[in-house]
Amino acid sequence: MLGLRGSIRSRGWQVAMAAGTVIALAGAGTAAASARPGGHAAGARAGLVNAPASPGTAGAGPVPASVSRIGSWPSASAAVCHFVDIIGARGSGEPAGGKFGGLGPPVHKMISVIQGDLKKAGFSYSAFALNYPALSVDVLKPSSTEVAAWISAPIDPAGAIAALVVYYDHQVKKYLASIKAGVTAAVSKAKSLHHSCGATLLVMVGYSQGAMVVHQALVKLSGAVANCVKGAVLLADGNRVKNTRAMRYGTSLARGEGIQTWIKQTAKVGPTAHDVPRYAAGNTASICNKSDYVCDFNFFTGIHWKRGFTVHTSYAVKHNNGSYTYQPVLSRAASAVGGNVVHDLQGHLGSCS
Image 1 (tube, rainbow, N blue to C red):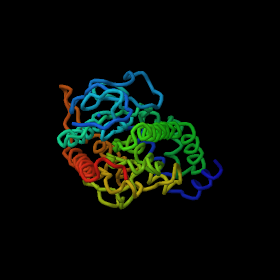
Image 2 (cartoon, rainbow, N blue to C red):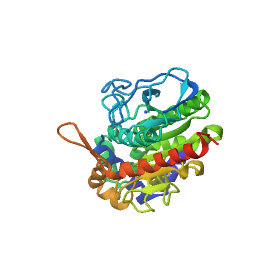
Image 3 (cartoon, rainbow, N blue to C red):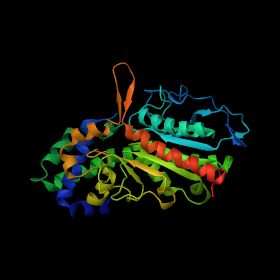
Image 4 (tube, rainbow, N blue to C red):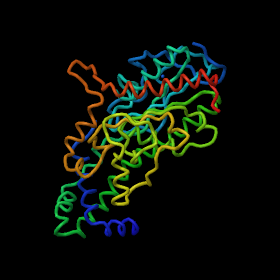
């Protein structure tokens, strides 16, 4: 903590901007042909658009970090491995259960596109939803005392710094803990799937906080498990770095970076920023639109945070009848990843090498 205080004291205006960032965060809120022998558990068949089975109970509060199967094609016996296993991580505040099987609308949409490519080519798959906390950004809502202290930073910088440190310790850390739980669950599930079916390819998909979970999990994986990760889609990734080596989609410029990356590089708060690892970069799609508050954060975006959150929540828009409209970029990016996975399967007969 002494190190944190020291680094913050040495960065006056950056601290003020970081404080503005968390105020804005608090104010906005957010919203699974032929198969190979092996050992995956059986799963109910899931449609390519709506997976009815779902883990957990919506509205029941944070749930333990775990993974639940949400469907497969074709239906498999307990002695069957699929060609591809897909792990999905929902965004902040999205329910662990419900219509989208614990994936949330954007991740469910992107996984359905990948599933469609695999099914069309005759390759079986299974999909799993990370049942991690995915805490809402409401946890970042500061107290009125903290807000007052940050606003008065030009007059009382020491008081603003002290309030920011307390805020980070008591609220931001809860959000980071949610991400950490998701990363642990994702890494554990990838290892478990590889242990059960060593030739099955792995694909990971995440949105917002879920994209950060997938991003950090990719960084942590190594060896034989990493060799099996053949695709990933990161939508609105708060860990995005400038000039990422991932395939870029959306309207954000190459120099755009995620909010956690920005905070780390300015106020030196949070984990060190890392780009997606080289083993995954060739088939990782990073989707981000210009001024997205989470994945394209900068001074301008911080000032116009309401616009930034409108961009961030516009990838999947819910209508009054309960249906959703998805930005075409989600399908384009997911199809690129799915097509590359199919190509890998056709070229290497499903090998992880």
